[in-house]
Image 1 (cartoon, helix red, strand yellow):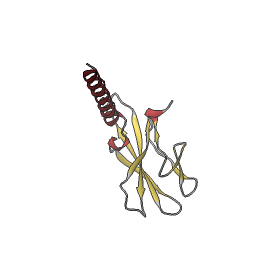
Image 2 (tube, rainbow, N blue to C red):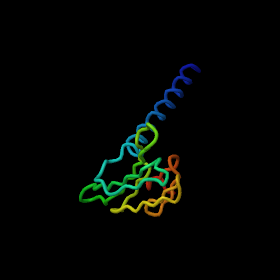
Image 3 (tube, rainbow, N blue to C red):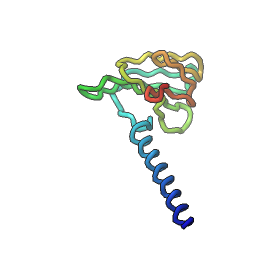
Image 4 (cartoon, helix red, strand yellow):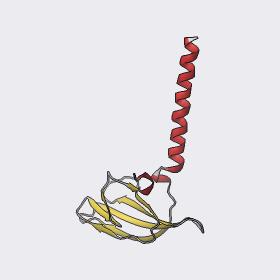
Length: 121
């Protein structure tokens, strides 16, 4: 009896965790964002990074969104999406220092920080 209960609880936990991962992957993974059309780019003061901004059009019933992509100029790393904001159709990118960038009023320390409007509190 106890063995069956343990197997049932463990199975439920595994199924719940798998379901949670699938939801995250399908709806919140920043690496799965739409590509969009290129708008502008800006290189960091020391040349280590480039931020490229793209505008995405979700169709007639969805507003424009801006996707910001971090390019590693001096390291052999894959480009990363670091900025995703809804109801924007332009991008202003300004470097504060070598590792801090202001994208449309959102300060990010690259390469660690990201901004995703879906995660706002």
